[in-house]
Figure 1 (cartoon, chains in turn brown, yellow):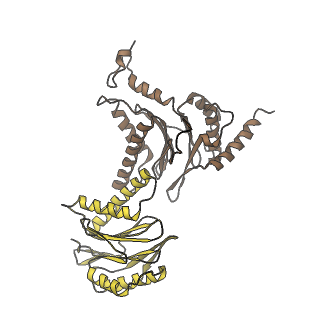
Figure 2 (cartoon, one colour; figure 1 turned 90 degrees about the vertical axis):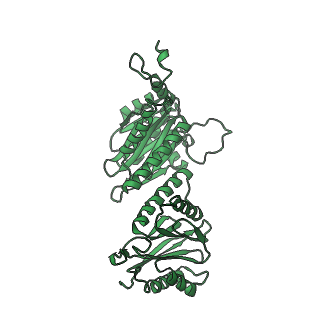
Figure 3 (cartoon, chains in turn yellow, cyan; figure 1 turned 30 degrees about the vertical axis):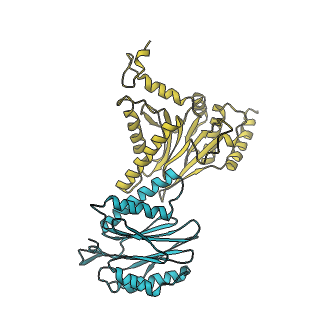
Length: 251
Length: 203
């Protein structure tokens, strides 16, 4: 019915919707699932690694996880090419702030900036919106650990735990029941792995199909470290998780 | 312009190590000494140290600009910048401001992946020179150059390098009113960077 109002981003539909933006948001729901969990002394980002073809060469770097600056990282769901552009923009923005103010850019400011950039593609120029959703994780001295989700409309919100991408409603419901605040890093990783197993619909989650990034800060020195978990470490935690869930239903 | 604040620095190559020595004076208008702990030497990654001789404000601004560029390079290329690439980038940066330049004459001390030292210096509009032995910059350029020519020998180990750098710098700045007032030496080796401040004449 409102098909004639969905060809252009710069036109509202009679119901007051921007269809192009909504279609862009749908583009993300086909992408590999991403999970973000904020713990007591770290933020965990996890993603499903989709293997599209055995002919693909081994990637030298992740196509889901990206470092924006020393203290900010993100995980991507959606069109990878669109993501590259935005990540480059984020990196430039963060460095420009550091250059100008001689201190790291606050996480929320960076997210706002990128979202403003995304929003301009929903209002000007006749260009289509970016078909990417992000989970940004970071630490700064103003607000400590933070986790933000942003979508193609340019909206963002802060979360304690979030998931985007394929099957995220299932992930969200699991988080609603199992998430607690102030979990330690290992528990956060296990919870994220549990969510991914559910969204991937897999009874046998393996370390090669997942990717985990741990961001943690030394609050005194302000130094933030980001670490992608190696497969062996992840496999060990997954095994522990398997054993726990196997005995969960027992009396 | 290069003599408003005062500076002196030397970069020397050793055997699988490289060292940089610099004074610490910040003068004002060729007359007063305003600080004796002004930082002119900056370690930009594990294997590159840059010394910026010249106008103090440009030293600081250029250092921020270099940090900006190094950070982006590391994020995009997912590897550290090599000393050679860094030197080329710095020369290019300076030439961009050909008709309104940074009044800075840099020296670059770096260690390549294979442990071999890399040395270069350039003028304030980015004309580079690379050498095998040493490079100098500063208000006492001739004094520094003369001292290095006399005391330098190839393939020094890090202790000999440290000693030579210290002696060359101290002797040269003692014959220059605009540099001195403190000295620091950094030696980059494959194991890490060693920094020492020298006790020197405060005049």
